[in-house]
Length: 81
Image 1 (cartoon, one colour):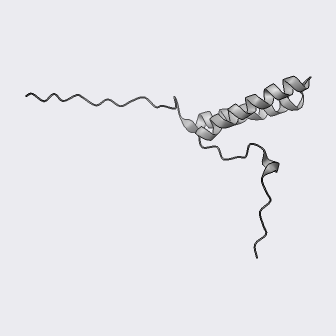
Image 2 (tube, rainbow, N blue to C red):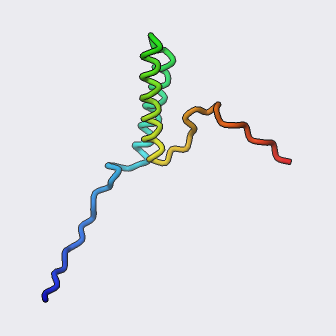
Image 3 (cartoon, rainbow, N blue to C red):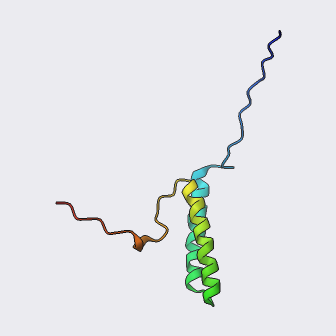
């Protein structure tokens, strides 16, 4: 029986580029999206932009972004004793 060695090739990055740069671009995009959502001309447009923000936030999470999606909704932390 003959053993064949298959050369190992470096696979391209799964993320498609430097994650830090993409995270910065997406964070800037999210800021613009939130301002558009605030200026939405109808509740339907506002809701659609809110959904887009949720998906954009999910993408940011994949890249290590740690902000909260809805900052005011988490329970306040108890003060230290």
